Length: 236
View (cartoon, rainbow, N blue to C red):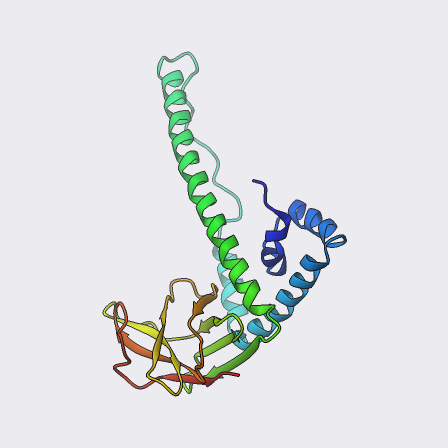
């Protein structure tokens, strides 16, 4: 799959490129000042976000990993069942059927991969725009229970990039909702999807908000908060 080199600053900063793509993009960086500055800014901000959400692994983790390695088979079992003879009439038919199934699965997988790649590129561009904005400001807070929320906001763009970690899972009838808080009534900034813990969320509508908050609301969200914020942080 081919990519516009100017769209690869985000994946490059996250080390998500293949070896070939990385070498090609690094050659591009030597002649493209805009991409070089964007990649450097993304790597710096990614490091800040990672440090904000980083946690020391428990001391017993290494022991558990080593114990699992000792119990896990390192090579597949030998093949004991004989394959059908090529002289049987069923083999060509089975081979053709297998090729058809693989072709159908491959086509579906390629379509899903393309959609996923397009979505990832669009998200990378939005995240990059906020993080490399001249007025980008990073705010991080940690709840008493250990949950961490980081917001990188840009008033010139009216947007923010939000990452969250260690928020407790809620029942299916409840959801976390983000809010812009300020001199006027709270405004929804969308809901937090915990199904992808590492994916940042880009939300718009920053406006004149002075604080960012998270509440627990009914599934689907609420027009106005129905409970006190469990997390709040000040914006620039």
